[in-house]
Length: 208
Image: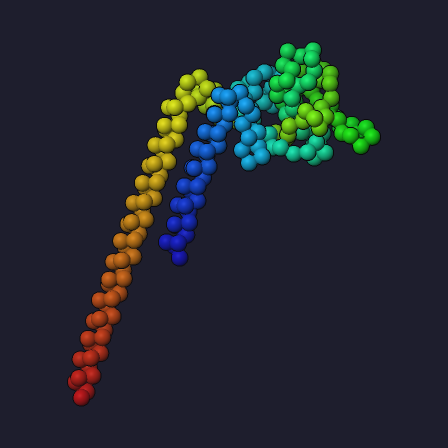
């Protein structure tokens, strides 16, 4: 039973590593192409401005879960595309906090504001430019992605590949070691049964 659980644990560990490599690779390729990285209904962004400090810092990697606008609650940090022609970031992704939800004739609008901003955003967010709700942020991962975008992508990917290879080799060695132990146990059990059979035959011959 322990061996089965160990094998399951090794497989799970390998899958986690492959998943991390896949997410990072997909994200970096998307960032390089200036696309919005999307993995498992999650969008990934690196924050470029200080409008949400101290909640979210410049350079943080944030994960935004795709959902419908009616799922948003007041206080949620959301991502949306700026459609305000008066803003220098028009058509770019904005990360601000929802401070009010308005329902006009069945259509939902979100009033937003940056935590570090003096006033709320001029235009409300609608279903058309809403992207999702922020569920995770990491300054360390944001710095990693920034480094990769600056030319370190091949180094990081190479390191990930090396780590994945080392884990695979380790698991392969453990598997063969476990297999060898299993074969040795079977051999010993077979010898034991043969010895018992010989003893049994000898006792029977003496009775005769």
